Image 1 (cartoon, helix red, strand yellow):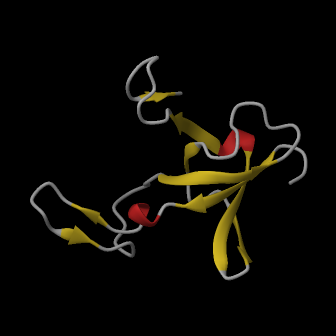
Image 2 (image 1 turned 90 degrees about the vertical axis):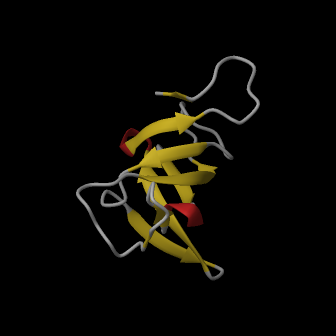
Length: 98
């Protein structure tokens, strides 16, 4: 990866979701603007806030898609990332940091 770019693999769980009453909502249903979660698989040399393996939150409309060896990835600038989830079991705190 070059400069401030991050290559992200979109989480499969972001595609379909369950409502609070248990109704399955397909990925094609859109209700307003919804952000997506993904995992950083590569980062450019000028990316400072995330590392490979971080789970990040981003807007799926602000992206470029690429397919590598049959797997779909999303190419983003670091400034297009909205948040980073802390790893589970982190002793520092719970939840997300932004």
